[in-house]
Length: 203
Image (spheres, rainbow, N blue to C red):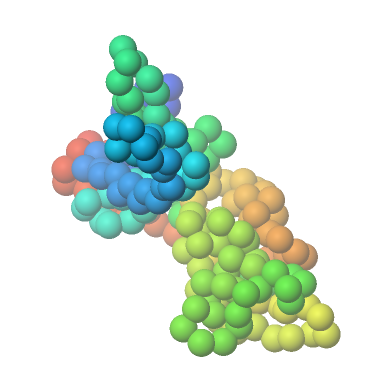
């Protein structure tokens, strides 16, 4: 496939890689919080009352998070095994696609934005506009925002990966948490493939 991951898209080697530089040098950062009951006789901490686990896959070459990959847990032969899996509605678009940059606005209800000032404002505005896409998948640069009554209009540049302009527009429309207006959409060149595991890709 010219300009995309070299292997067949049906194999794990096509998606078990960084979507930006195609490196296969990945790691998983797991953050766990749990509340466990204590057995009064044995002292063992058992029977989770509450568990919160977040796993982020990261490329060790370009240091970008990999939102097209997730960590799943299985029981195999009585032991717990963790395995990386592709996110079905995302991986093919991100690995086989190219970066697109959109200049756009999203008009959202003011109560969808946690804060619009201070050091956390950009992330809060991006999340208000696009939800998890705005903080985990898209690269967002909030240029400015303005208040119009009980709504906030967020002006930003957004980089996302897609296989066509139509697909990029569709992804933005699906992610937007309010009225979306795209003023420009341009395809960018893909970052060069990493030498470790991604150098077999062609551009």
